[in-house]
Image (tube, rainbow, N blue to C red; front, side, top):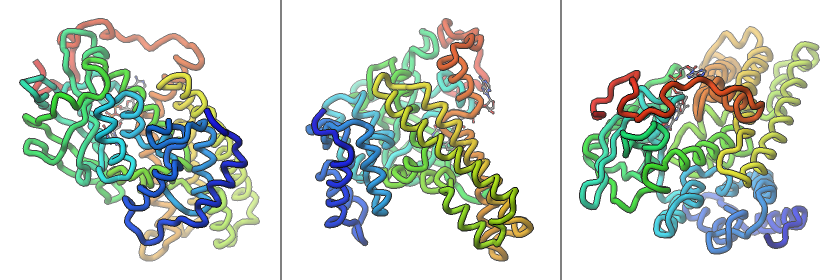
Length: 408
Ligand SMILES: Cc1cc2nc3c(=O)[nH]c(=O)nc-3n(C[C@H](O)[C@H](O)[C@H](O)COP(=O)(O)OP(=O)(O)OC[C@H]3O[C@@H](n4cnc5c(N)ncnc54)[C@H](O)[C@@H]3O)c2cc1C
């Protein structure tokens, strides 16, 4: 670690931002400049676009960028594929892809969940077989955010059916623009289509595109999911995520809709009920929860230095989901009877409704609230583990909720 005095670095960033701004330039061009400055991933080594600062400094840089209303910092904190490649990728993969992932030249999505494998992701049945120089992929994924605009995906597939479920998975970097990839959008209750079903038939992935080791994809997935939890668990991170240039529209949509307390204070003033004691109570509670969650997220970041998947990230993620629901509740309270209306009759009602509906995204994406509670119970509170009858059985012998069209 080199010079790590946060206040000095904050001043340096402020100075840099005085003479550098994205303006109307394309995002990729701006990101190249941010990367060259070292402010996109300050905690990474200098050989990989960084400055060898601490994660705490990275967060401080994110704050300075946010303050200046610029995007691009925090790629080392929440850019899921870049962080995954950085930690687990081979030198070749890093050399070829990191820059494209960091600048957003390449848009990506996450092909993890399947109809029979969401919370129990290790039950996935998409099959990968090495034939010559390529892995051949067959299977079905679901809830894939941003798949329509993505060029590549982090894909989890089963490479070994004769070992227990967690041990036979591999993570691949999968090109999506090829025959055999069929993407069908799913329509949500909000009317939007943020995610998709993805059908994979005889899809080819070059043999060098394995992230981590063959059959050890679970380790890599845990690391990638931890980054996702941190991303979801903080408003700051969400601002960063929308700048992390992923193809996942959800980053700027449902999950990014948590208002700052200030936004709700101002709304209450505008609606003329900022003197209502019930509204005031709710606003202060929201403010307190929001603040505590920011501190917890910082703790999660510090913990992540000690291992790829800190359980504290589950705590922050759970808190964020609660905050999303609570913010929507407070907003509806402030909107009062106008909350019964929708656009175009009332923008206040429309916003309260949209936030109430999309709050559920945060309770499900990146692992449901119930699963976060399990993780916290088992890994933070040291409670007894959930019974798992299939944990040590070869996956081939495990009874499956959905029989895969491709599994044997
Ligand atoms: C906005 C959004 C974006 C998403 N983006 C992506 C994406 O880009 N890529 C991707 O691969 N996936 C994505 N997902 C999918 C997401 O990861 C899964 O929906 C999630 O893991 C839950 O899986 P499931 O939907 O199959 O529900 P299930 O696992 O079937 O769970 C159903 C219910 O049972 C509960 N439950 C299940 N198991 C347990 C247990 N052991 N203990 C207690 N309760 C339990 C769950 O909490 C839930 O309430 C996204 C989801 C959302 C909402």
